Image (cartoon, rainbow, N blue to C red; front, top):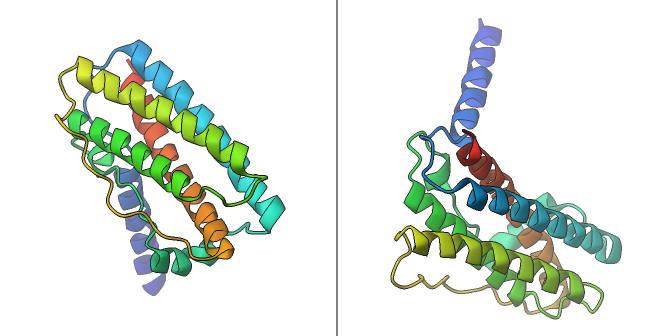
Length: 195
């Protein structure tokens, strides 16, 4: 009996996770060319982020973000939500705003990592530029559709890194959080691009 209850609990838990992670909203009214460009840009940013993660691992031996989660909480490293994009009732305007706002947050977080190490500076700059391009593309589409807010909301406070280790650990956590954000963003955009 306990085994059946455990299996039922695990099945329900897996089903709940899939429902939250899979965008199921109605077909979008966004231009196909915009969605395809965004998908391409997300893949490029993901590749840049993987390079950053690999270099942090190779240069500073920080390879496991899960070991740094408590430090991330104490540093106050925020994560960008995409709750309007993954619910069963996809809210297109709110989703685009969260995508754009989240990209701006990660760009600012990467900027806060400036000085992490000379070896990583070019990688950080490339990642910031590609994130800026994607965020700008989304913002432009929101303006074209009359969805853009009059003023962009401020991102809030950025973490302050007081030691080289905190900056490097922050880099690992920001890169890991960005990767999770991009994976969900990619699924949402791919769903929206489906005919």
